[in-house]
Image 1 (tube, rainbow, N blue to C red):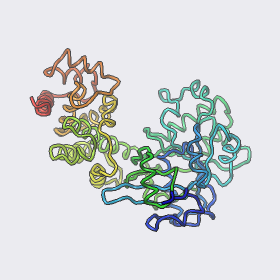
Image 2 (image 1 turned 135 degrees about the vertical axis):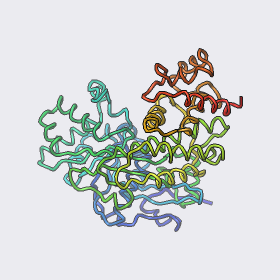
Image 3 (image 1 turned 90 degrees about the horizontal axis):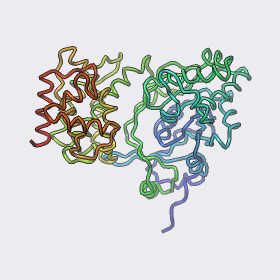
Image 4 (image 1 turned 120 degrees about the horizontal axis):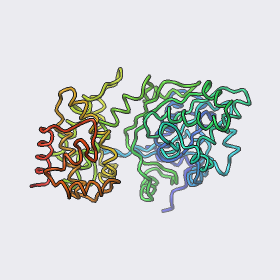
Length: 466
């Protein structure tokens, strides 16, 4: 049997009939979005929302994808004219679809003039970014200009060149939409751009602040790295070989602050949420999703599980996690109008059970000392202040304390030595105060009461089997 042909416009007709095709005339769509950081997450998230928006009737929102460093994505997508397959893995079976939103791909260091021209094009109205947190060069409330300048081709330098050309041509400003996983990402981007322009082009700063917008967003979708085995499996199922295939889960979420400088795709028609304030949705993700993930990680590892779907199937763990989400994390939140926390919990529980896309507990458990203050200790303080008990979160804390003692799995945490020293010095009878009490390693606004301490210690004895 011959190998399947490479995905390309000429081989689309070879796709198996089960593969979904773009619901629009791809050749009739112009480019309206420039995306910085065209990795797998963008291709599984924003590009799919845009693909769906064009299928729903929007026009001329094709994407020019930009790699700021490596040529690998360009080299995999260009021979395929930007086409790629998305494999949504679910317990009921995979859903394969062909995504056509990406119309051009370039590498910033190799094509700086072309990138500037794209950002400055009259047809471009939106720039989106998935460049990871470190690309913002944050320092306190601002940016480290020295580090950003030393990087050379920073996002600020790239955007400034394109914005300067737009201003020179008398064109309208742009919406710059950060889709990176950092709180209040729109404000972070806006502050960084203003600081950069104040030093390098003060007149352009005034134009940027008057004409451009940086809406905040919250994004969520699990997108693991595509393996050679994934590509082989997809080729067998699709009938063509795709060197840029992306694997993901059915769940996706995109919450966007409704504050744009001009036209944008109708993303809200295809599942995105356009809201006045993203912060309540970020808080729900942090406390309900991330908080539940951490609980699954530490309780699951102690029970001998490796993956999220195994831990949530454990009858000793599932009720704890569900209570943490619904009765402890959710009650600590102030939801936005129309924000349905019950439906969100339902969706998360279904997501956790997806065995078709295993999610490593050890990965989630990494750096716990940096995560649990926001995920657990903040809602504990809110609930304690309002007289509500949080036994599920306390049980999760007990599992965390056992984990950093070395129970269940290797500890991968920047505070591992300090936490181990707490155990050596305080022992089980003093570990709660040493870590969580006033002056403790993870001291916070929440101070465990005597009843809380007894609850955590009892849970530790039970979980450790002693």
